[in-house]
Image (cartoon, rainbow, N blue to C red; front, side, top):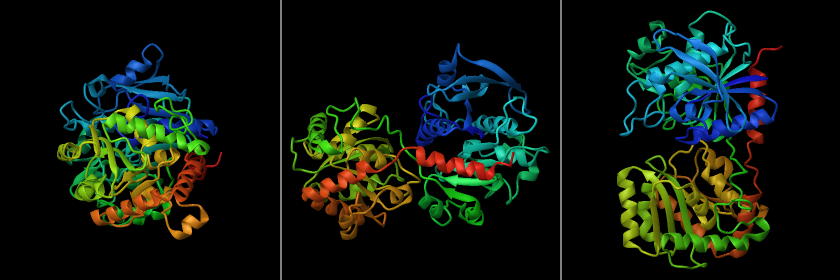
Length: 483
């Protein structure tokens, strides 16, 4: 099985979010499962820097109206074969993959990711310039959404296309003039095409033209077929429901393993959970919290955004602290949320610790040192932190949405009796519902037998990429034409 995996980011070369984690880990797992895979991505500065001296030019492109580009062949640090689009005019820039140094979108993102889609489509065609031709083109999110549109509007045989939705809220929407800028015919600008409320949507193009669709958890696959999580595309997704599959993401269980994690002071496993308290003391010291083993310490590592629901925590923070609990928070994003959490920490020294920004080693310490982890996300397509947390014996308090539903078993008498409880879910994205779930968790925390049972249940869960890779391979085989 030969697969071309097209993505705008992949760890460890470029990362802005979960797409990069999936692109790096899933491709590695697929290769381990026997898939002959090539990963295609733009030649941003860090990517070109990595492959310098170890890449060769294998094709050149002069697609109108795009700038000329070269296709370089190299390898990821994992060994995954890597195809890089070298076009300095579009990709050799300061700032991030999508944003200028000041935070605004690059004004030519339509052209930048139009070229990524155009190259992916060219390599998926029977007349590809490469000897290696994929059985399936696997596209990811809006940045590659035009690839199936190019294939649909050009004559000739090509591989079937799978489009994976990682977060439907990001749709790649541009003014109608983008059609000319990316070389698509105006015949594509219609409701059953790329048109979306008078504009061009790269994601809608992919959802309409791709042969099959997938998303990153079974529950999210159902949620996006309805308001509000359909974000205007629920009708199209419902119409294509028979071609839509939900496959739960995995995590890198080599990096996220409390038994071998070199970023935490004391390593431990399910049989030695008492050692977790050493990490709790280290976390309390790091944030200047009062040293206490008996006070529940609640952690959070997250972008500070409306989606992630931190405003729900702020609305109940004073009452939550009276339970009593301690809070250790790491994240960045909305300046108003950042300032509100800083103020909370100033009002409650020794009880609340906040670090604005991102720190990889601190994120590991929070997972290992917190007693419970907070994820009040309004929506969460898959989620990773809940899987990290459970692997570290840290039960999760979360809103029942998306991948959180698919990975966390709510604490209930039946779940406790069967030994399957692994966290605490609340069903309305509201502050009072969140407070109730935290209260339940604090009560159970003081029942050491049940709490230990929940910790071990989470640590015993299999969140590796093996299951996801097997599901994707089965989907590829279903899509690919018979040999």
